[in-house]
Amino acid sequence: MSREKERKRKILELLKEKERTPKELADIFKVSLMTIYRDIKELEKEGLIERKHGTISLKEDESSLQHCVICSKDIDGRFNVILFLNEGKKVHACCPHCGLMAFRKLSDKVESIIMKDFVSCNPVNAFTSWYVVGADISPCCSPSAFAFSDRYIAEKFSKGFGGKVLDFEDALEEIHRLMSLGTRIKLSL
Image 1 (cartoon, one colour):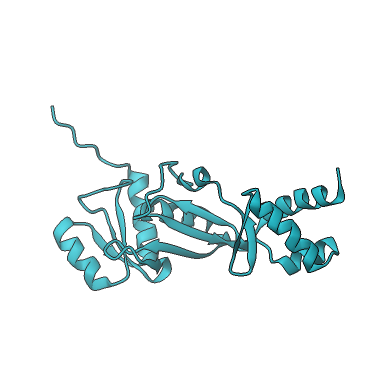
Image 2: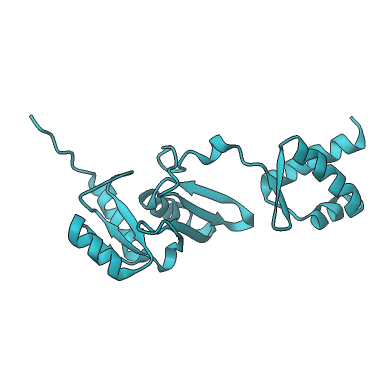
């Protein structure tokens, strides 16, 4: 195997761990930035990597992004949650319910969490959001959890659809409590 092919193979291995800058890669391989940029260009043409804001990362396989780390459901863009872990890694969850459960399991590795505000669909900081847990509607996982950037809107939602309005810490505990009890199933006979 030629040096160039071996270097490109090793670049892909390094990018599996975390995203990197061209300078980091040049330093690791002790080659010029021009050489790394040539490798990057070839790997990009092959569809294996992508450049984002000065960093290089593996091109994420769409199918790998489509399944929740907790329940394995397909991820719907309206409810998705991204947990940013140490060393630049990310974990995806399908909804705030699973996002809270993932945080509980991975809390020592989590640097930040982005959720979608249920009304605006804008990304919000999960740690400062408000949640309605246990509403009468459940568009994804049960018991339901909805994230809101504004407490007032969460309270209005709760008045219409039930559930408790909680901050991040209390929502974590409530989801855990409800999951340990199990979810009731309504049967019509």
